[in-house]
Length: 175
Length: 93
Length: 165
Image 1 (spheres, rainbow over the protein chains, first blue to last red):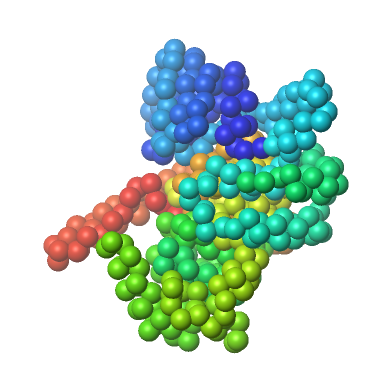
Image 2 (image 1 turned 120 degrees about the vertical axis):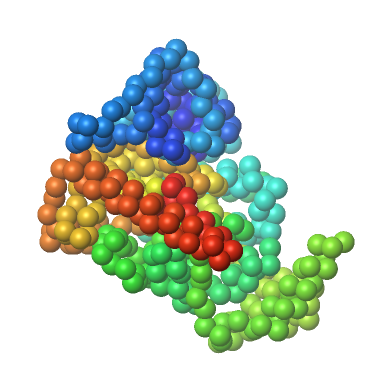
């Protein structure tokens, strides 16, 4: 699950975005695109956080109905704590209603960190073309066999569950 | 791509970084943006970043690195010169 | 080291090779030199992230991408005040950090990270935040003054307010 995917699935939720200049923009996320440009509604923006200790500091809060935020100007985004669980729920709901034989789809969505690596490389074809397909295989195998601490509710847990499936279908995963 | 290849040859060697934070460690990985991954790090300015004592390996964004200190024996300057010249020629075309 | 000899011919593109290109490729392919390859090992582990503005975040790395955008769960922001041996913490929840703002990130050994904290005094976050802001202001003034001085000699000293790390 890529960060952008998580963000896209957080639409409709309250988020708090800190910009590069320290300003904070809070609002309901209405749209996200591939460059992380955001549109928020019911927005309030203020000049930096953590001024509570100093009463003399004037915080100006500007409210607006809708705001468009350029992705390149974002420092970080605070999401609601339940976003990860919600998205996992959505994914499992989607899978439940789809054909069980859609192995590739499942691999695309249910895997955590490891698949991020693969998907990242899929998108990045133009950049990392000094990688060979053979190179990726040994790398994958290394991590499949390593002793990773089992996580519990983390996305790594998903990877462990489906490991056997991925092993047998390894040949199908091609970039 | 030249420095990317150059750093690839330095993998498993000990390098020191200075970006106001001086870090020493074994270069484990590098990528095309010259982001570095170091293992077994030790830090010279402990006080500013005390948590670094409990950290064993880090990923450093290439754009933030000011210097990478190397030993002379890690570099074959003649080979590097040749490679640089060759790269400049290919770029000229 | 003989391995260094094997690697070196790779540097010169098309130069004299002591081993076949295929052999060298196989050797280097073990490492897979990409951003994602460097980070994937830290998933579901507690990491620290140092941001360009000097903020120190601790959290569990849940996911990331090729730009090093990261999702941190149970994120905590920590401010160290070394001069007075104090620190402050504040929980931040679920964070998505844009990759370009990251200076460095690394795995924290959860058994050892509390060590230095035990000898430090914990203070309220607002107080530490104010101290950090004052420190940043002072540093900004100092660096801009330095920049002006160097400019008199024709030297360019680049200091950005957004780079406080």
